[in-house]
Length: 168
Image (cartoon, rainbow, N blue to C red; front, top):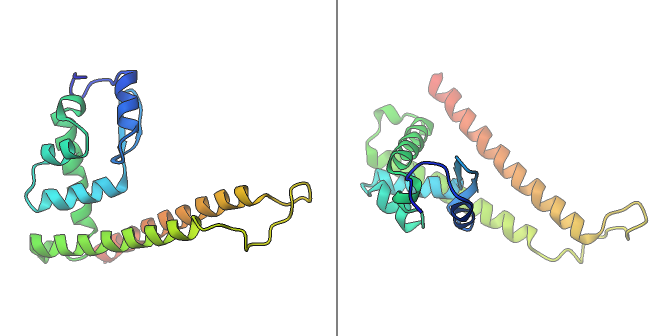
């Protein structure tokens, strides 16, 4: 381990890929899971140390780098505050409450989508393979991908509407 913010070794990449807080990692870059960013932002706005939050997620600062942690949290915090309509006139606690409500809604929606897409699909009529149809496993994968993409687009749409409302 070590280097704190430098390039990651193959072993470090494998370690990071196994963490729920990490969506993707390359030799020089980490992409964090949206859920981690959201939780991290809320915890930071309530006064917790970014280093502590990352450490508890299995992301030690001596591996990630203190500067990288600071930059990420600052970027996420700024983005989250801008996304809250009327945040210029709101207290920190009101901003946090709005973010928590938004993230809870997103969490519930994702959980509902996952429970729908994880059900067995035996009751859905699908042509047998070779009849120009698709098999049940392939259909399940396609539906999961589409549900996640719809969720992603709905979140992007909500964010853009918030930005439009903030400029109007």
